Amino acid sequence: MTGDRRLDVLRAIVQDYVHTREPVGSRVLVERHSLGVSPATIRNDMAALEEGGYIAQPHTSAGRVPTDKGYRLFVDHLDSLKPLSPAERRAIQALLAEAVDLDDVVERTVRLLAQLTQQVAVVQYPSLRRSVLRHLELVPLGDTRILVVIITDSGRVEQRTVESNHAIDPAVAAELRARLNAVCAGRRLSQIVGPVTELRERFAPEHRPLVDAVGTQLVETLREETEERIVMAGTAHLARADLDFTRTIGPVLEALEEQVVMLRLFSEMTDEDPVTVRIGAENHHEGLLETSLVTSSYGGEMPDDGVARLGVLGPTRMDYPGTMSAVRAVARYLSRILHA
Image (cartoon, rainbow, N blue to C red):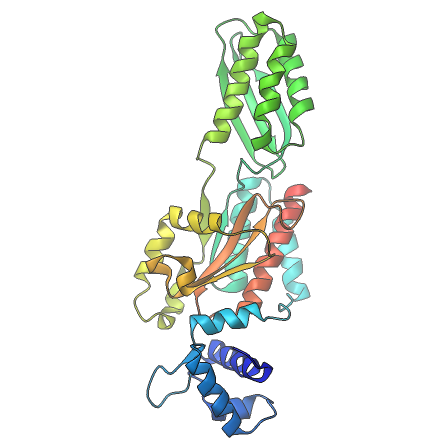
């Protein structure tokens, strides 16, 4: 579609329809918006928009409503996002700053995001593979057992127990801990396999089984899929949006219950943009054809270097500027909290 005026008409239709849930006619556009053209011109513009597939007429005598294609054009041409109010920013910062551990941070975040947007909020736990190792601790549990504690920059803590066939020398365990932290701290966990493997050559042959056992446990921890999980809040908001779905909300709820669906959608998104929006059929799932998903990465030191994603899912008739702003702001605050 070409023409700034037609884009302005589309913007006005989207804004009115999101606000009222009523199809928008040319007379309403003239009354509510200063478009600077005659009603006849607006009708011509609406006809062109409809022909291009950006708006549709749900009933013979009704006005027009945006299509997925129209929402996509609207989102792609947003000049700026609606800023959060000072009160909202203070509430986000205060709530997240009071969290006591990673689980608490994630739970607070998902509830906060659902409250801010009045949509379904989804937060993925920080990915262990993309996290940076902050510290590794080896804690003797007896003569032949040692606890491996992995602490990441995202606040995640993983614990694994290693069994040895021989008595563990505390001095060797202390040296191994020091050497592991020296070569691994500050690296992504996916990048430590090589350094850990090379480390065994620095120990005497009789101590290498312990080095191998600890190294194997580190690698196996990275290969586990247990960290790939999400938490959700605000599914009750879908009930209030029931009129936005031509079908029942059942398929949407079923898709949300299948965590693998949301994890797949998150994995398909890139960090090139601060906020990513998938609309309708772009979600590639039958149950989500009438929904939009707004997401952002979080947890990285840079905006495009996140370790996990969070987002909001709701009907395609949503306040995109406000939702995108809330998602972006919460992701930024969450990243700051995790790196504090």
